Image (tube, rainbow, N blue to C red):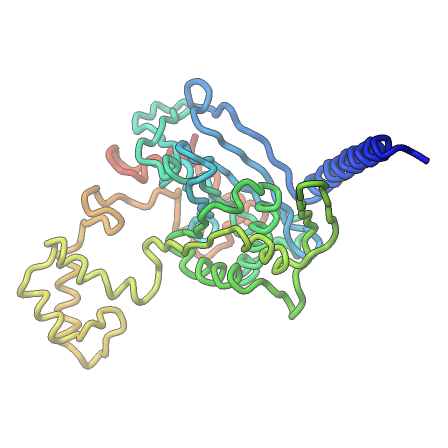
Length: 377
C-alpha cells in the first residue's frame, strides 16, 4: 500500500497532467474555431503614412450567415489610453454602403488625409481629435458588398436592413468570443445617417437575443471556465442568445449613439437648431412657431402661411453646411452621384459608374475634398 506522501505526489502528478491536457485541448479547439469563423491580422504600416502606426490597428473577417456564406470585414483600433478599461464602440457608417474606412480616416478615427494633393499618393496624418484617444472602436464594412465585405454566393450578396442587423449581431458575438479581453468593457453601438434604422434594431437584438425564422442562430463558440484546481473547456454549437447571456455576466452595454439620423424628427429639429445658432431671425422663428406648430416637414398644403415661412427659413440657410455650420458648403464628393442614385452601388452589377476618367474634386478647404481624394487616388 502506497504511503500518504506518495499518494499525494501521485494525485498532484495526475492533476498536473489533466490540467495540461485540458489546456492543450483548449488551444487546439481555439485554433479550429478561429480558422472556422474569424481571420485577423495586425497592420503596422499604411500607404501614405510616414513610419509605423502609433496605434494598434487590426483588420479581419468574420464569417456570418446560416452557412457562414458572408464575410464581414472590420477595422479595429484599440484605445490609445487604456484598452482594458476604456469603452468598446461598434461604429456603423451610413449610406447604406459606405465603408468603415470612412470612419477611420474621415470621421472619428485616428487618421486624416491632408488637403494638399498633387496627384500622387495622398498623405495620411494623425487625427488629434480621434475618439480612439479614449475608446476602442470597431469600424464595420456593412452590409455585405460594402468595402471589403463579400458574399460567397449570389444569393448571399442580397441584403436588407433586417438581414444586415442579424449579420451584425452574429458578427458581434463571434468577435467578442475571439476577443474575450473586451467582454467586461463598457459597450456602445453607434452610427450616423442611414444607420438610424439599423442601430436601434441591433441594440434590441443585443438586449433580447436573436432569432431568424423563429430559430436561434447557431454560432460555434468556446467558453473557458477556470477554477482554482482545474481548467474546463466546452466546445460546441451555442445559440447567439446563450453566448450573449454568458457575456452579459460581465459585459456592460451602456447604450447607442445616433448622429444626424435621417428621420422626420431630425427634419423638424433643423429650424429650432438654426434659430438657436442665430441663423434665423427672432421674427421669422416666432412666425414659424405660430403657424407650423412644430411641424416643418409634413405640412398641410392648406397652411399657406407655414409654407411661406418655411421657404423663407431655408432661403436663409442656403449656402450653409448642415453637417457643420462653421465649414463651407461643398458639393457631394462622390464622382457622378446622379449616375449611381437609381442604380445598384455594386462593383458586381455596375462597375463603370465607379471608373470616372475625369474626376473632379471639391475646392480646397472642404472636408469632403478628402473623400474625393480617396476615390481617385
